Length: 318
Image 1: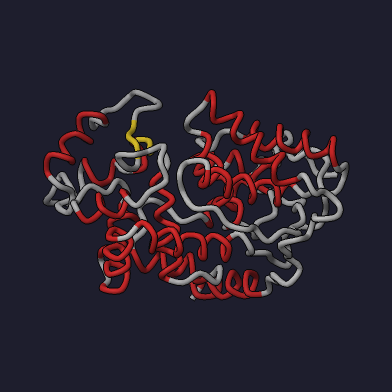
Image 2 (image 1 turned 135 degrees about the horizontal axis):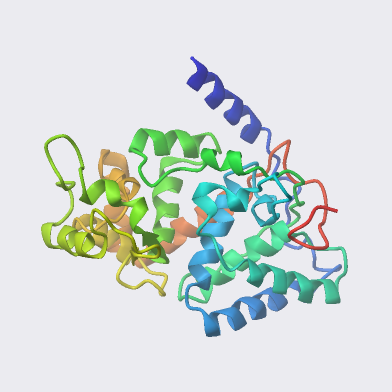
């Protein structure tokens, strides 16, 4: 009963969102050079760090899933008040400096006009486009939130989730099964630490050590990277074979038994989601189109307790 009430409360919270305030030409008059300025900041960061696109895409996703896309993930902790970025699932988030640099450049051009939430949404779009993926027009007009609590990161979907848990997490935010499968394709960029998939390669269940859905030689390679008593803090593996290129390789590998997370494998456990995986694996164009549609939908999530201001510094409330 408690679970049902929590789910209902979350659904009401996210259902109260209003995307009507967002507009494609929101800054056309007040900050016409906004988008090119952000693109430059992302490009410059990518020169020195190839992991920036994956970091920005994940950061935006983690922001939107808690109180909507309000840049609460960017706020720094204050003393004992731990912010979202210091919650367990976000400890590995990085590249915050890219957003900080973009914000500084934007403030020079248009002081006090552009929200950090909009900058993060645009940077996530650029991360995909600059990695060889599709581009799209981002609706703008988000406000920055004033609340950021580490405990709230428990609302994020876990890499160990099964399909019903994933479906519930996404539907609470107005996102469909197709959105779930399309947005999971963001795993084409990125890296997974051993702790996030250890459950599949050691002590899988009472009778099996390894998840039988994993292709045997692939499972063996994962076990060599992540032994049962792994002590290497940053040990792990890329999420697909073309980790700096935004493509549909993630879906092809998934069908070959080479998924990393339990939540990836979960996409093959219902006929509808498996059919979508197969469709996206067969056509980069179909995947790109679905991903763009779902990204616009996700990045437009706002809530009644979300954004309220335009921060001058993305790490600090005004």
